[in-house]
Amino acid sequence: MIFSEISSTNDYLKQRLTKSEPLTEGSVILAVHQTKGRGQMDSIWKTRAGENLTFSFPLYPRFLSIQNQFWLNIGISLAVLKSIQEVLPKHDVSIKWPNDILINNKKASGMLIENSLKGKIWNYSIVGIGININQEDFEVDTQFSATSFKNEDKQHFDLDQVFQIVCKHLNHYYTELQDSENWDDLKQTYLDNLLGYNKIRSFRIQKSGFIQEGVIQNVDEFGQLCIQIDGRIEKFGLKEVQFIS
Ligand code: BTN
Image 1: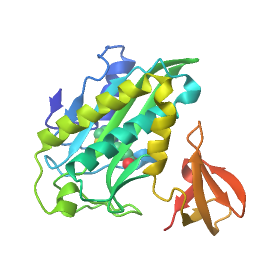
Image 2: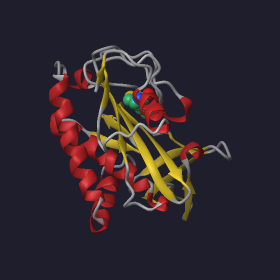
Image 3: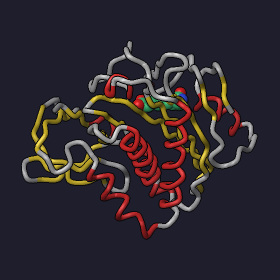
């Protein structure tokens, strides 16, 4: 379904699914323009009409246990990463934990994955993805300044073509996830493309307020970032650590 204007594709889906209006797994809600696009941690995702990809789709990943929720994040992140690498093969594309996708160290894509659980059973997951394609300037800047395909590659891109490529990779990685024998490979590919993996970097530790050097060693099954600091592995959740450089 394509909407020329909608508040947020994630919110639209959430309303439908909470009203028990079933939607087939993977049916895509695409917006030419979102008036109240949402980002992670209550941020806003503001992009210009008709210049970018903003879409959401429902998944029912009942093959994953609740403890394994982060695997969905790994699969979707890899799909967007590989799509951008396919379209922009000459550029440096990486994942900034947990799921920002950077081109040449600037943020080009973000995702908002909202899971609904019923007790111990997975009810649904809404996957919302924003990819900056042809927009040239951005009002809201993140710590990693925002960019787009056009800003990095100096040419205009056909949104439909990019969307088809993203769908191809999403199908591929979702299918891969359904076979847990592939998980080690998926995790290694995620780590190999993770900004700062196995490299000395600086992090601001929220709790202490200190900036410390450390090396990202892993992401655990709960999605926590495991950083070796002063010879010890410390684990951090989303708001607990900030990548400095
Ligand atoms: C982030 O990096 O903060 C996540 C951004 C997610 C934006 C997408 S755009 C489509 C979908 N609808 C929303 O309201 N948000 C997501």
